[in-house]
Image (cartoon, rainbow, N blue to C red; front, side):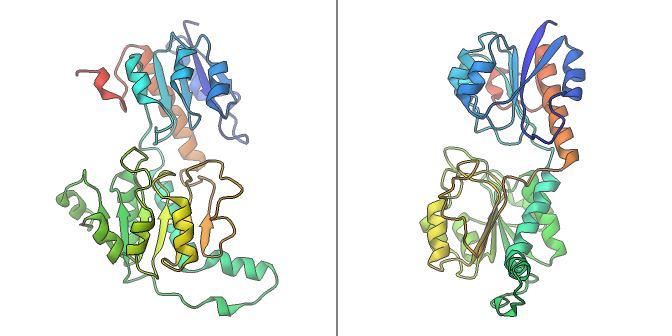
Length: 327
């Protein structure tokens, strides 16, 4: 084999040890695929010696990891988010970085609506009471109808647009905040584009879909929660770190907002002392929004195809550090 590609594994129950699709796709460019199990950048740095490319999902690819593989020609992440990759270090080394932005938009949109229903209809609390042997209908109030309410979307990319389509079926009015989207594009989806503060004040439900960047770190904190209705609920199926979790917990405890459904966290796996754990008005899931058997097959295939393109000397379809290419 001409190339060595290291692939970190993610789902213990999935047949990743064989990596049949990755080996087929990358074998066509003369690449050996080496699966490794890593959780930290230090473990990854120890596993990538001699690698010409690496495919990761959420293990940090730091400058030290890149230094450990001086022959690296490509980094791909089998995910939409790429904040776990040091883009500046990759660009300085001339290493193209690619992501897979369109593999699970419908799954995440469905999960978002699932969290909204679970919180607004108190499905988890009612289930837990019944499973514990309590027929407790006193839990019902307060419970507003979903139809006729307003959903605010923070960021209006692929996933948020899928959420907007689903929201119409629930007879929700939809607002969006996104400084990179024009009003005409939002209007195509029946969405009103507004400033962030206005969205927070008007929305009954707020759903976060923003990427994690320096500009969006703790975009929603104490100031923003204080603007929201006391009956409002917030959901995050975007990236952890966009919401200030201690500030969110405080807002929930003090009744500034009514509930939350969170799928992504600033620290993953979630810390045992995270204040959101154990709160009755919060529904938590372990970064599950993008998962389905089909979406995982798709993301693994597309990430391998991006690496194959780079190893053939082609530009990847979803290049993150686009400054590397002039055309």
